[in-house]
Structures are given as structure tokens and as C-alpha cells.
Amino acid sequence: MATIVGGIATSHIPAIGNAIANRLQNEPYWKPFFDGYPPVRAWLDKVQPDIAIVIYNDHGLNFFLDKLPTFAVGAAAEYRNKDEGWGLRPVTPFPGAPEFSWHLIESLVGEEFDLTTCQEMAVDHGFAVPMQLMWPDRAAWPVRTVPIHVNTVQHPLPSPARCYKFGQALGRAVASWPGNEKVVVLGTGGLSHQLDGERAGFINKPFDLFCMDKIVDDPALLAQYSIRDIVELAGTQGPELVHWLMMRGALGEQVRKLHSNYHVPISNTGAGLLLLEAA
Ligand code: DHB
Ligand code: FE
Image (cartoon, rainbow, N blue to C red; front, side, top):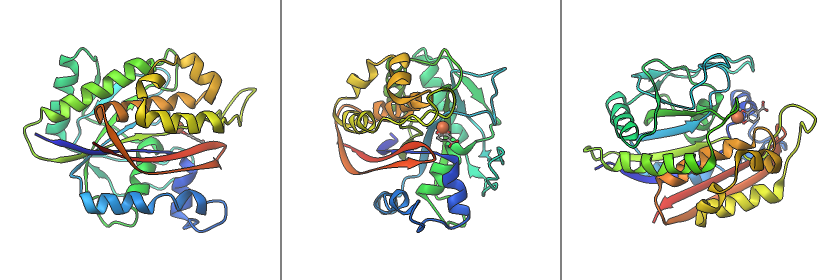
């Protein structure tokens, strides 16, 4: 069976992609953020996962408000990013794992998670920025990938409880794959941020730190919050926290926290990083 070797939660702010492209990692604004990542990269180099499942929300590149699936899983041989208007440059295409994707889809639909299946899928900053943070400066991506999109853009959004259960079903789906691949699950985005409206710029550091703590030892507690609660506590884009809950659900009951970092603000966002190993 395939094994989930660990889970990583990371911010996916588009400005990070530009900071990488312009080599700003050591600028005072960026250094405390980028300094969080070397331990995660060292762990990835040691563990050498074969496949990365990347959980994110498409922000309007592949899906727009006219057609926006609640959950969508990529089943393509390759995924490409595009400039979404931030000036982000296209990077080396990301290799897919279509047979593995179809197995996950079969298993998840079998557990009554109705999905949109994507044999073509453009991936936006929610996917590409975390990949660049994990594996910078590589001539080729060292992992095959499965993008999982969740609607955290247009209400109604799936509840945290539903997303946590999706993650648990994803864990079972990986475990029932007959190959012996090592799989890492990335939950991207968050933490508190509000990009629009009256509370634009709203950040809630105490709540972010509470989430970073509870996601490790008591994710079921976070799963009890409603989307409305999370918007109130963490801003209109705070519901990206559900991607973290999906990653956490996939890891099973017990995990070990190997590393964490939190820096605020980056682009008006609480930027969290967690590395978890299945215990
Ligand atoms: C921004 C965009 C995001 O998708 C996000 O999660 C955080 C910040 C931004 O536009 O700054
Ligand atoms: Fe986002």
C-alpha cells in the first residue's frame, strides 16, 4: 500500500512567488517568512516522497464564479500554472499521477464525496507557490502531483466538518492503493486574512496560533467551527483553514509535530507553516 509519510501546512500567498522570482528571500520583509522553510526541505530531502497531494482553492484561474465545484481532483498527466495577473511567471510543468488520481477519485466517490474530475487543470498560486517553497531551484520536480481543489471562494463553502471527513477518506484512499509510493499531503493557504470589504487587512494572530496548536492535537475541535465562525474569527479568506483540516484528516489520529513557523504579516496575511509526521 502507499503510505502517507507526512503532512505540511503552508501559506500560498501569490506575492511569495514574486519574492522567489526576484530573489528577495533575504530582504528584511521576507527573511522571517522564508527562514521557516529549510527544516521542511531537509525533511523532504530525507524522506524523498514520490507523490505530493496538494490541497488548495482555485482563486479564479481554472474555475470561475460561473462554474465552481465544491471539490475537484486532478487526473491529468501534467499541470501548468499561468500568470493570473500578479506577474507570476509560468514554472516547469508539474507532473501528474493519473492512475493514482483515478484510484483516489474512485475511493472518494465510493465514500460518497461527489467530485469534479479534471483531466485538464490549470493550477494557480494556491498550488504553484507551495510547490516552489518545498522544492526551490530544481531543474525538475522530484514528485508527481495530485491537485485537490476546494471551493473556499464562493458561498456556500463546504463545512470544516465535511472537509475534515474528506481528509480522513483521502487517507483511506491512499492506504488502499496497491503501489508502495510515499505520499506527502500539503494543505495550503490561510491563516487569517481578509482581502476585501470593510475589514480588509483583518488578521487575528491569537486565533491563528490557536489553530496551529489545535490542528496538531485536536483537529476535531476545529472541525466543529462553522464557516461563519471562521469568517468572523479569521476574515473572509480565513476559511482556507479547511485545506489544513483536510491534510490533517488524511494523516490519521496521532501525529508528531516536527517543525512550525508563524510570521505576520505577509501580504496582510498570517502566514503559518507546520510539518507533521504520521505517528
Ligand atoms: C493573497 C491571496 C491569497 O490567495 C491568499 O491566500 C493570501 C493573500 C493576496 O492577494 O495577497
Ligand atoms: Fe488564497
